Image 1 (cartoon, rainbow, N blue to C red):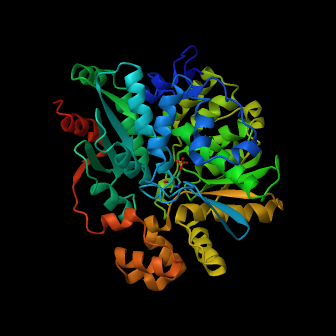
Image 2 (tube, helix red, strand yellow):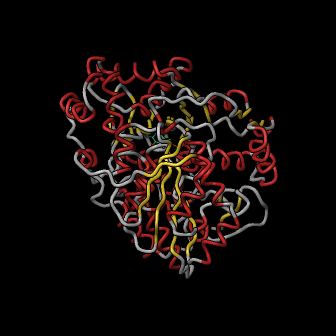
Length: 494
Ligand SMILES: *Cc1c(COP(=O)(O)O)cnc(C)c1O
């Protein structure tokens, strides 16, 4: 399996090279030359563990890894860092299945891919005889940062620098990042929003002069953002897993179609579901749920992507994004794997903040349904689900759950549905508890944690216990225009 660029014809590299590079030199993302078909029947997969299914999926994409290398990466990633042997359990509430993707070290779904990426990356470096230190540059809307820091902390031959919007993440998210241990970890708050952070990081990846300086100092950049194909592919696994688990538990019959709802920001998670569908998993609708930053909803309604709008800070900060990077991979695919057409649209996005797809491309989008939830809808969903079932969900999952309710009302679609539950409610305790009852508003962050535990009968996760008393180890702050200087200073390149 070779990897191609979404922006230039003729680029063709191995999986390990694509993982190392993160982004192609032309600014394009790497895509597999085709989406492979699952080889093992669902009946057989339904008897396998998460790790075994992970191997069956990833071996079709990472074909230049040996069986030993890939299994080693998988076993190091999906171990007792997760608090359940199922890795991604399904919880049923109000007739839907919540696929809980938050049982890893940092209690958000980013752990699903970021616990394996460091192993994929160091294996790729060995395979390609890379002697340079690898510097991971990451922009985060809150959850990627901590998951990447945890994954790369003290991994030999790597350094990791994380940029987050200083006023755009939850208090628990910030505390998780700025207490990160590890001699190779750096955390920087920027005066700007997530899109500023992501744009700044992309600029550094494309800065040839900076790369020359890095190389002269035996360093090179790579990315832990969801633009890295080494993040996207591990996310395909849990869509296969959830389908075959529903089958194994006889909630569906073999071949029965299900719907999937994904709370979406950068479009990585839902794109993984699209890949799973194209690998043969019987998924009917891919329901893309947005918060009030509903640029994707508008896109699915009109075929026009328009980022020129007010950026809103919401209670689901990991979805506060106006430039959904991974959408570029979908655009490339629906254009018939046409790099030139995609580049034309991305150039337009860069220049004007807008692009519009053709009618022909729109026809290839019928798998997708867009929906969005307001702040009020989101809070109401957390409240109502708790009142009805006792099950507590986080704000991001609530956006998806609310969108599903509206979708069912409008479409009378009674298919079995999996909702990607992307974060533990403990990560967004304040918003979650306020949604359940305003009386919690006056309490401190960790007091709320204890109240949530009482009310949900769920033990406080280790990730939260760990930061209660942890000392702050990072206090760097910079302007969005100073990101490059900050990186050079951290790496001693002045
Ligand atoms: C990152 C994140 C999302 C958005 O996922 P994308 O792959 O960027 O679309 C949703 N919810 C949570 C909790 C997240 O951390």
